[in-house]
Length: 123
Image (tube, rainbow, N blue to C red; front, side, top):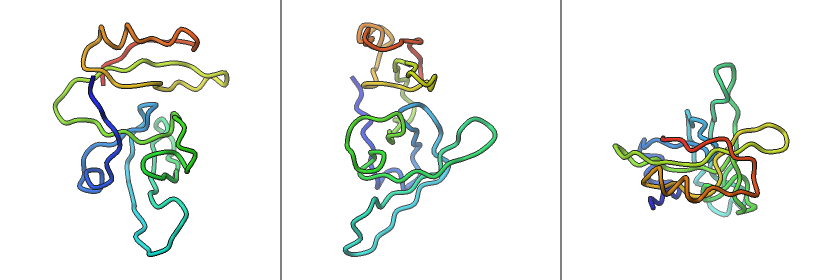
């Protein structure tokens, strides 16, 4: 299984970052101010072709709740195929839930049957 935990240093160096839902991060900023307690990472996330939205992050997590969210930041390893499972929430929003995998079979075997599964994809 490939770990693609968010890494601020690599992200600021220009490596590709997506949200857990697979949306492209088109710009990432970090506030480096001593004693600043609020989330320090801000990302402009592309939503479809029409607009972009700014999200706040703490260590890659959407805001500071540290619970998995489809808005969490994920690093995408260069040159490697990875697989993930797509689901749909009650509001119809499609998102990636759980881990990323290095094979289609691993991802397909890990489908969460308690959620509305869409399909396994390659990223």
